[in-house]
Figure 1: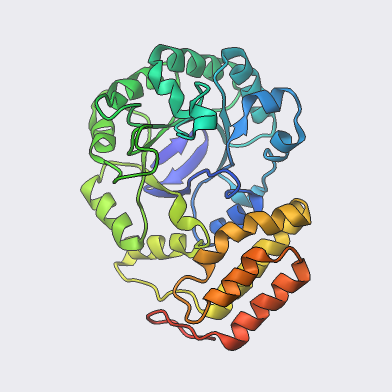
Figure 2 (figure 1 turned 120 degrees about the vertical axis):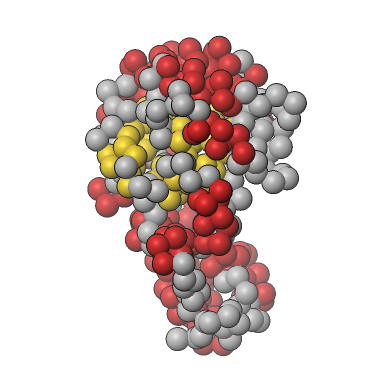
Length: 335
């Protein structure tokens, strides 16, 4: 059974992968209810945390029901990262996670996220400083390497383990790939199968369904679990489906239209409570395609959902969807 500090993760844990403007507390709570084992916050700027920026501090929020939960930080300055880890630990999560994987230019271009993969010694130095300054366990999420021609993840894993991280999550792409092409899990498996590795290792990349999740688990049986990222957007049910399929070999029917509408409303309304109404409206738009995927006659309603800036109007549109659209998913129905 894998553990991070005192947090038991089970035999094979399925995580909600951290995503900016996606994995906030309202969405995390829904995913937890649907079966996600481990939560990780949106990534938080180390500079923002140590300067008491309101947006960064807000991201430290989590509820007890989310545990085990990690707070993820990013940055490229050793002192800022060390101090940010102390701030994150003061919120009392189960672990602090370092983001050495984000490929976006605004992050990687400044030497943070996967940009650090151009300077492995610095990556190790910062990680060691964070481990030493943190009062709680430290984990890392990273990628295979920076360029396709050089994927040093096996060596990176050993060096990070040596400086004290307690778990490692690996996205099976390089920084150069961004989110293009297929994720390569072979090196993730190689890291875990290295007899010198004794920390939990988790795979990430292209887990889009329960069937794919089982394939990866069977292909790499020594892994301690997997992270699900983009496939969760507007689709928190994927955790329920994966967990059921892994345990029984049976596919669950998709959620009904009524459940989709109810969860979408819950997501929107709890987001309004947690952040400003207009911010909640804009950020929930990212989820509508997922919430109503494969629903017949949905397109005109989705256009209205992503253009409205009025909460009452959006709720009315959701009610209309329930009254006028037909469910068109295998095994699904309106009720």
